[in-house]
Length: 185
Image (cartoon, rainbow, N blue to C red; front, top):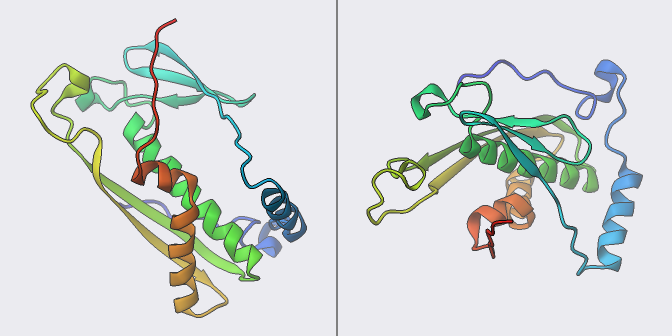
C-alpha cells in the first residue's frame, strides 16, 4: 500500500504543534469507571441513507455523514471507501486507539504508530445476485501490520500488540460470531 507519509500529530508529539497529548488522568478515570461496572454495555447507533447508486451517507451521533460508496469495478461512483474497506478502516482505527491508550497507561511515549491492513474477500456472489455457490462470504483472511515505535524495547511493543488485539472490540467482532438480526419496518 503506497500511502503518503504520516504527519505526526499532537497526540503523538505534543510539542510539535502545541496540541495536548491524551490525558493520563482522563484515561485513568475511564479505567476506573470500567472496573467499577465491568458488565456495562453501550448501544451504538448508525443510520444509513441511500443517496444514489451505491453511495450511502451514514449518520453517527451529531457528526457529518460518513460516506461509503463502491469503486467503478463494483458499479459505484468511487467517491468514498466501500463497505469492506470501511470495515478495515474501523478495525485499524480500533487497534490503533487500543495501542495508543495502552501505551499511555503504561507510560510509553509513542513516537510512531501506523497500521497497514489488507483482507482477502471473494466478491463473486455480487451481494447475493451472482454466483451463490457454497463459499465463504466476507473476509477470509485479514492481515494487520503494525509499525510502532516508542521509548521501550521492541519486545514490549510486541506484547502490547498482542494484548490490544485480545481486547479490541472491532478485532473481536471480526474474529468471533456476533448475534445479528435484520428486519424490515
